[in-house]
Length: 246
Ligand SMILES: C[S@@+](CC[C@H](N)C(=O)[O-])C[C@H]1O[C@@H](n2cnc3c(N)ncnc32)[C@H](O)[C@@H]1O
Image (cartoon, rainbow, N blue to C red):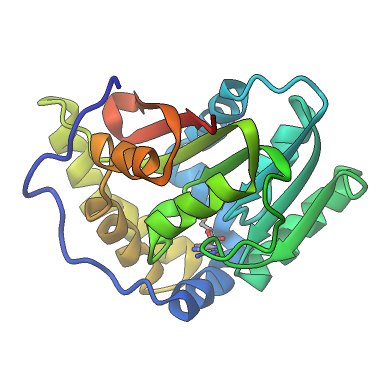
């Protein structure tokens, strides 16, 4: 595994991840979520999602499950890059409503189904999908290990996963700049654009306390995935985790 571990002391207070609280927070910011992503990442979020989808080597025949689908960017991207059909699951009704608007505008309603549900108790049959994705969702899940086990359960043997999540860059040069940005600039812009006080305080807290890199790769291996890899992107500000069900 080509991974880095979390630098001690980079974490801060573990935020409250009670499902009703997290779902309520995303319901509140859903209307501005896409704009915020673009502003806060400078558009890089789209590139990261494209990389995640490309890592699955989809052939045009696969059924893909996108967990924590939010406003459906991965679901939509996957249908454009090789998935035959996609089911997107999220527990925030407002995020799904915005996602559904985009699906309809893209004339993809016949290929993308959006369903309300929890990542730790997926409303999906055993061994029924060929690939599964989670983009920037797993750190919000109260029991990420349970979500990893659910991914394994719903995948066909040979099925692949691609998970994107924030990390904490350890680079001596970029690390401090990123920490300063995420603690001082990001919450200010987030609050101003979303008009939600707590959501963009939660963002750096949830990133700073998430077990990224080797620690998260271990969760995937413990859940039963093989060929687990954690690829740092942008000096480890984001990780792409890949693996396979044997
Ligand atoms: C940061 S957004 C990411 C959305 C989308 N995947 C993207 O790439 O933009 C996280 C999403 O995960 C959802 N979420 C968090 N925990 C969840 C859980 N336990 N079950 C289902 N959805 C969850 C939230 O409602 C939210 O829509």
